[in-house]
Length: 54
Image 1 (cartoon, rainbow, N blue to C red):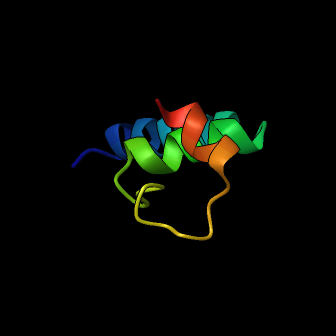
Image 2: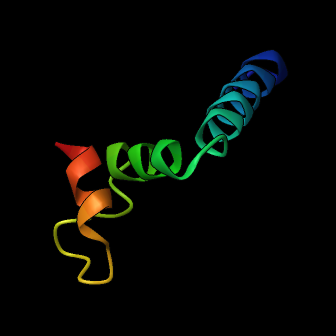
């Protein structure tokens, strides 16, 4: 892979991470869409958090 392509992917990941860190809701959306968490299976999630997913 070309160094410029690697750098472009790193920049994309950085922008996505910055966007996800703006709020708890944005973080939840990021983690759910990445398949990292499933709030319906996480019993520690509050009803408000589950509601934002729908």
